[in-house]
Length: 388
Image (spheres, rainbow, N blue to C red):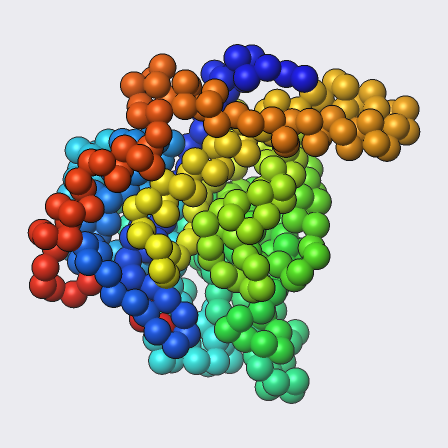
């Protein structure tokens, strides 16, 4: 099997983008829980993200959500992030919380509603221009709850037209990244329910349109690594939203529900050329920390992705190929399992130490006093959060 020393330098290429909203309050459809120290501004979200990067060395980018993270001066926000050692990454559009989007946004039957949704994306593109962000990520809540509620074909036609208008506005060095979700908030159908629908739309748009794969957005039993393989093969895998799910789109810490699935996904990413300095595939978290502390939750998340990436890099691909070609079923399976069961935690602690990072980022955060500091300082004002 490949040794950790042989793959250690490849871990230097890993960048995991943090979602600004993960630092705000969140919960379920029934309750959003407030917690001490929760950021009240996007600047405080960035400060918390900087702490994660300081301790892990893995997270120098932060994704924004518009209008949740809307500010008057994005150039100043970009400079503020740079002072913290961060870059502003993916800009996520929000067309699912205004009352007019009750029956859809980019797919709505009313042209004036579609116009407002398209204009929201134009606003996001302007934010990208000011922050230097590459990706505009679109997730739509559009769908229906009852058979006959909407014209399924008509909604697809309107979606294609709306996306084309947005795509025509993005710059030459920017990308439109379309996310999919098979259910929720709509339960009869979603307008972008699966990777095939997302692929069909981005393929029609052009080479600067790609697919985002959220690991929690699939039906139980779905072979997600196959989807990864296919999108890489087609040149249309743009990014990941990493999280875990037990039942539905739970947005739990990535790797917490099924570490082996995360390993399998990352192996196909590595095998398919989706990892490393020559890859355009973006790694991002999309999680909500409902009951656990937010900053340690993000630290744990990026460490989980790094650990499974290391294990995926350890796979002896030459031995695997020989076993596959020979029809050696258990031999091939054993090659994967040997890498998966390799405990790389001590090696990763040494990797961090050699790069001036704490061996144990979780422990370092607990000892830093940062949580007590923000609990004391962030009193008053309106805490950031997702208003479920």
